[in-house]
Figure 1 (cartoon, rainbow over the protein chains, first blue to last red):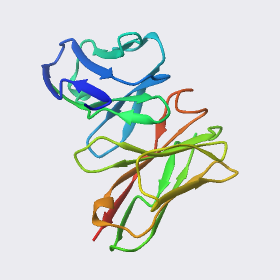
Figure 2 (cartoon, helix red, strand yellow):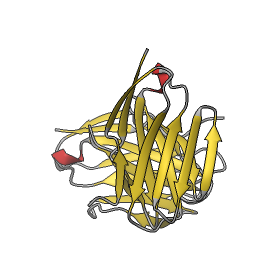
Figure 3 (cartoon, rainbow over the protein chains, first blue to last red):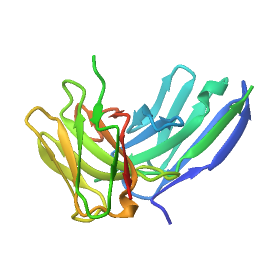
Length: 106
Length: 114
């Protein structure tokens, strides 16, 4: 079993839909990162969480340390949100999930 | 302000050769970490350096080594290149360690081993 599991692996949504991407992990961590990667390779950090909830624009990230689970929500999705979303957890090293490929259709 | 810069952006090597990749962090950032991303897969953690000391290492062979300089820039060296080392190598900087704040990634160095 992988240390970090993301679901779904692929997600297609219509513009305007509310999107949720989940991340579960099996190790003790001190931080969790949500990252966005567009085709061509560039990675952008969306959030770093150690507890609770953070919001930035249409993006919301939550983490439940006891349940070892985090979610990334996108409200009012837009085609420009199409990208790969990656969860990465930090215990004594950074471990990445396999990513969720999101496609938002107009 | 300049972001994280990596060089070279693309390079081609042959099996058995050695390669050095360079990373300049954002000004004020003291931590640099390195990642390997094989085409179609997620990134894999290679190294983290903070204040010029190695603070973490992923599951990579000893052919991979790195160092951080007094100005906090960093180099990743890979010896005895194998075909499987072909990948995008990403560098990220942060002001503290990997739990201290957001990571800022460079555009990567794409290595092709023939």
